[in-house]
Length: 124
Image 1 (spheres, one colour):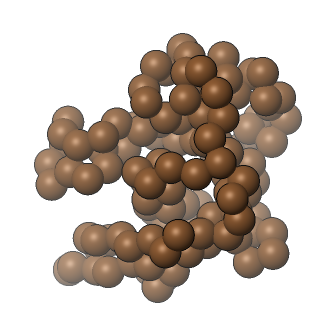
Image 2: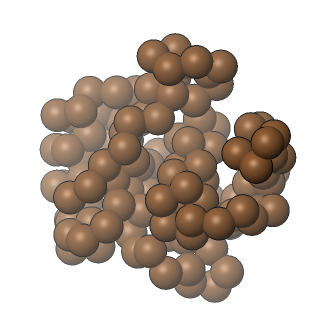
C-alpha cells in the first residue's frame, strides 16, 4: 500500500504534527483491526486511511486511527488527508475537498500561493 508522511501545521519539513496517510490499492479491503494494527506500527498520534480514490456523496471516505482506537474526527488528520487527496488523487487545483468522516462530512478549503496549496481551512 502507498502511504504518505505529512507534516501538518508546519512551515517546513520535519516540523509540525506528523501524520501517515494510506491510500491506493488494498486500503479498501483493510478491516478495522488491520487499520488499528497499522496505526500501532506507524505509532504517530494519528494515521488515516482513504478508503477509495473515488468520491461518494460528494466526499472521500476516510477513517482516522490512533495507536489505540478509531476517532470520529481529529483536526490535523483531516487537514493532512485533504492535502494528500488534492496532491496525489485529484492532482489538480481545487477550491474544496470534502472528507466523509465518522462524524459526517467535513469540507476543507484550499488557499494557493504560486499555484501550490498553501493554507487549508476546515469547517467542522
